[in-house]
Length: 312
Image (tube, rainbow, N blue to C red; front, side, top):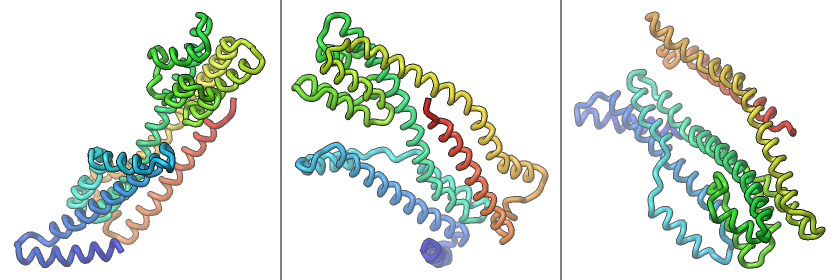
């Protein structure tokens, strides 16, 4: 269907070229680029709308659907800034002009959503690491407050509210504070907090809270042991990341070698882009090479994830 739309855009461009006196090739490239930009923008808007709806359903109960509707309207009216990956669309159009191939613009448009997902995945990983540090700091702060004579509920409210816990803003402690202030289940609140990626260590706090409330065991000593275990787990994770840095760098360098090969061919006076983009054998080689490149990167990433998932 994209080919039909592109062909129709080319026919319109040919008609406009006869009227305006602009070269047909320039108008066709401009029309195809505008179409790809519109398709990429529409895909991004649909993805953002779907993500916003899922978050609203998770955060608000069904009895507050009018509030959710007003919140969604406010978010849309506020105008969220588009992601920087949309710059790939005009860059792809500009790159399509000197190469005389719409394939470059199509590849740039197809890379928008994967680039957005990759950026969000990396941002989620950084946020998860901040939450791990925050949970360890929360354990230490709770143990310190308990040793000063505070009650468990006072210790939770002080540790969460005074801002002494590092990266505490990464944790959403609204449910925990509500449980402490209004007589809710504090272990259940910690379990809810543990469901957030990176805050899984809060389940240990919930277990210590339940044991201390049922048997009268020291909560501060239990929190110290939980904090020590979480620190050891983070230290192991950092060691694994350090060990995987070398293989990941090697994989990235090997993945970039085809680009260096193209630059070397251009520097030697050859024209590899013309062969790759405008001949059947070149297109076949380009498709096969891109497929093998993707398979190699996916395989390397899977091996790295498997090494990271090894239990301590």
